[in-house]
Length: 220
Length: 309
Image 1: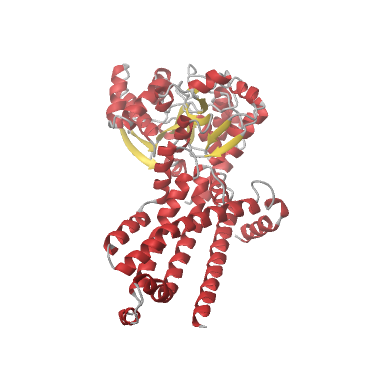
Image 2 (image 1 turned 90 degrees about the horizontal axis):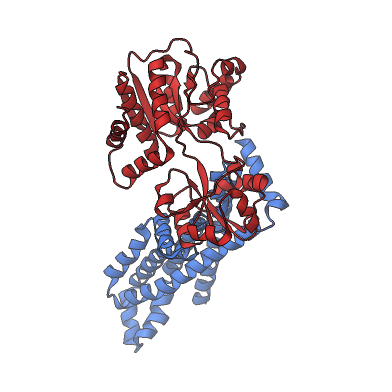
């Protein structure tokens, strides 16, 4: 066991494992690219949807259950399905990651919107605010903490799951996990897993800092 | 007994080699197999175990059919698991007989051995065999790794053997399971033995939907499959031949406990080994996998049709 961790340390710190097209730096960049792009697309779909159903209170049941369907789908199955239909490209991976990320964003955005005190919304309307003004100046700021939580959840899930890109021959940190497992190289597997965890935690910390800055700005 | 102690035992046994090898130099189907080897007897009946995949079950029921015909009482315990499970079961006496594959078994018992020709491998297996177990003569059917291209690719680049791949160095993309990148029967050996360099290695799965899908769609040019895969014939794919014997032989070989190995069993299994071809085995696999037939029925029908039962 000790030996394993010592080898892991060597692997993580030696310059050789960081450089080249199979190096950690390159794999890390690929992993970030997959994760951020997938989360951005998911946010572009999930945020408007969550805001809409939260603001109007209509279609919530349908939207939430439909999007949760994406969370229930087995990710690897979805990747293989899209792959068999469309061939070898990153598309299957992005479809699966977006399907995984959208539910967390939609449900949290909706939850944030419904948690806004109805009296506050009434007061806003009573002061003559229009629908979109209530949405953007009252509801959205108040719902922001929960919306940000949804984004953070989605991002963590996507970072962890982006390892499946390697399952269909692409890069990212999953390369180490899949290759290591297939080649009985535990150091590589563990190294890949540790790096994924570090990326997930780091991105989450960044987002929570951003969230704090946003709410402080609002309070001021 | 856990796996580590078992393996330790296997290796210890494997280091008592030379004498037993001479005693049982099995190199071809026609030989009698090992000398009668200390009085095993199948009189009390024997139990056949099989691993957890279709072909191995079909083989188990084929063994059962020919042994029944020879008057041996048999019981089949199908789908026991992987090699890590069935071989301990064999040593422990839960099962007595197991359909195995030369290359895979040798790799399990003596990972460093890189012989690839069937006769040499049979001798190497005998050398590596742990106490109490023996391999019987191998059959002509084999389920080996192979490298496959589509008919169109073969025509376009003039590919018939693995050596031909070297003429297209830097142009072709290979698809295979991730471990094949670092394996001798894979990218390393193709480079060493045939001087082949691919444009790209795509890590997919082991003879599964991904690698076959990618070959069909043209995302990869060369795919690593198994010779008994029915899709090869169904899609008219071309298996590249291996003139320099890079790929170890995977002839089917009965692995049996000494206590049950008598002449009756030996002869019955040798007869089956002589009759069953790779193509026929592929067909039987297909009847189970694609036509959803019962492996026992498929095996019995085959044995009857070929006068083995």
